[in-house]
Length: 427
Image (tube, rainbow, N blue to C red; front, side):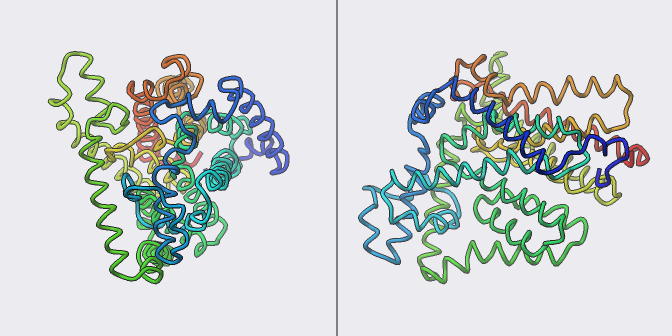
C-alpha cells in the first residue's frame, strides 16, 4: 500500500480538488450538527449533561494548572487562580500545563476562546490529513473518512470536554506524515511532544523499534525527556517539578479508585463486564478475569504487527491503525474521547479490506461484520438514536468499546492473511 497501483491512479485527485471536496463535506457535517444543537452553548449543555459546560475539563483542570504553574514565574498571574486545589483531577504530565501557561494571564472565559481555536485546529487536522496520507485510496474513502471524523462521537466529546486526545493524535499523524517525507528529526520531535502530553502515544514508537530506526528513536527520546523533565526543571527547579509529579501521581491513583467501575468508561474489562452483567453475571466477578484478556488481545495484535513489519507486508499506515486501537483496551479511564482514532482507522480498514485480494464474498463478510458496524457505532446520529442524544447513556452502553474491538479484530484478520500469503499483500 505504499506504491499506487495503476488501476488506482485514475481515481487520484489533486490536493487542491480533494481539499475543495473535503470543505463541502465539512460544510454538510456542520449543517447536521447545527440541526441537532443549534448553538455551541446548547452543544455544551446537552451533549453530555454530566457537566453542562463547554470545555469543562479546561475550565476545571487545565486552566487552573496553567495559572498555578505561571504564578511560580509571575506572581501577578495568581489573580486568575480559582479557590481550592488547582491540581484536583489533573493526572497528566506537566507538559500540557506548560504549553497552556500563556493562557494563565487570561480570565478563563477569554482563555477558552483561544483553547477552542486550538481544539478546532486539531480536529481539522484529523478531518483533513488522513485523506492525503495514502494517495492511492479511492477519493470516496478519503471523503468518507472526513465525514466520519466530523460527525464522530469521540471527536465531539473531546471538544465538549476540552480534552487533549484530539491534539495528541493530530501530533502523531503529523509526525508520521513528516517522517514519510524525510523530515525525521521534526517528526521525532512532534512524536515526543505527543508522548509528553498524553503518554499513550508512546506505543507508536514500536514500528521504529522493529525497523531499527535508532536515530528517530533517539530524537523521540530526547524530545520526550525534554518536555517531561528538562523544560519543567529549567523553569521551576527540580523540587517543584518532582512535587508536581507526586501530586499528579496521587491524582492518578485517586482516579483509578474512584472510576474503577465507572459506567462511562470504555475500558475493555469494564465494558464487557457491564455487558455480561445484563445476563445476570456479576460485574465484580467477571471484571478481574477480563483484565488479562485485554492484555492478551493487545499483545497478540502487537506481535502480529511486528511480524508483518519485519516481513515487509505492513507499513506506517498499518502501524498507525493497529496501535491506535490498543491503549483504550488497557487504560482504566478510557472515556469516549480516547477513541478519536476510530473514524480514521475505520476508513483505513475499509480501504484495506477492498485492497486485500480476498474473494468478493470474504471481503463483503469482513466489511459487514467489522467496518460497517464500527462506523455505525461511532456516528453522532447513532448516538441520537440509541441514547436520545445523551452521551453519558451512550457511554454506559459501551458502543465505542465494541467499535474499537471490531476494528482491531478486522485489522488483525487482514494482517494474518498478509502474513500467510505475502503475494496477496503485495497486490
